[in-house]
Amino acid sequence: MTAPRPARARAAARRRPLWPWMFLLPALLLFAVFDYYPFLRAVVLSFQATDLFGRPAGWAGLENYTVMLSSGEFWSTFAWTLVFTVASTVVKLVLGLAIAVPLARRLRGTAVLRSAVLIPMAVSTAVGALIFSQILAPSVGPADQLADLVGLGPVGWLTDAGWARVSVLVVDTWAGISFVVLLLLAAIDGVPGDITEAAGLDGCTGLRYIRHMLVPSIAPMLLFLAVPQSVAALREFTVINALTGGGPAGATQTLVVDLYTRAFGDSTNDYSSAAASGMVLAVFIVVLSAVQFALSARKVTYR
Image 1 (cartoon, rainbow, N blue to C red):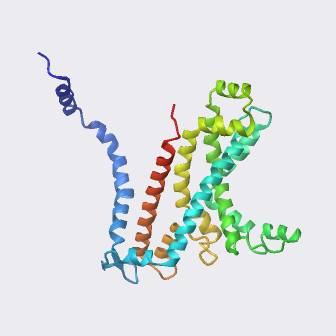
Image 2 (cartoon, one colour):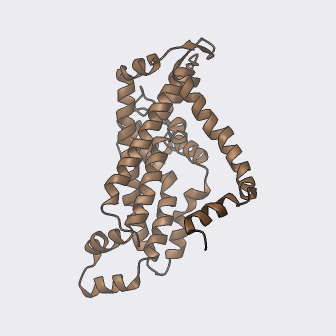
Image 3 (tube, one colour):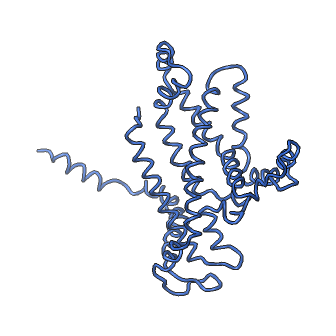
């Protein structure tokens, strides 16, 4: 009489060798040292106080959180972070789709245009942001000089609160659009040809085709891009730090910049408050990602 299958499966599982775990051990150690431990250390630090030198100085409980959440400056930063995240994600997806659709056609010259669109991927974000900071520099920058030639005068791309926010959004879009276009091109190329032919026979062309046929067909890719692009916008630091440093007057300061300022600002060294800000940012990222998945799950069909 043979043993039941569940019993045999359990016996086989107990006899499995441990050597596969040995291959995973180096990666697990790296994650533990550089990801898990720093995160847990930051959680503990967020409930502590710090002295003038940034060293832990006793248990503070929820004081760091209550002080931060009761600050009007924090909520202003939080609001701009939310606006920047939504605007950055939407602009990249819409603009990326507008670029990818014509480039997906096998026409003469599209290969050159595809290569040109991917140039920002070959440029470091820090280098690109520094170049734009010189282009948008007040008075002496080419952008202000061009605006002066057409009669607009000095615009203040980085010194005016409104224009500084627009400038940060534009440079952030430039830095990340190549990745979006690349994946959308792959998704469009993967759309079955019979769908396109059927749409053409039914007279579904132009914007109607994009809205009713193309977008539903590449919805999984759009969702795949929406979540990491949102997280990348929440974590964006290089562009903002290189262009405005969070200014003018905190107009472009996001939670990441606020975290950096609290920890490494001039004579600040408030690592506990920075850790509390980081925990708020982490919760924000998890909640936003969960909401995106929940809202998209009803309308996204994976083949």
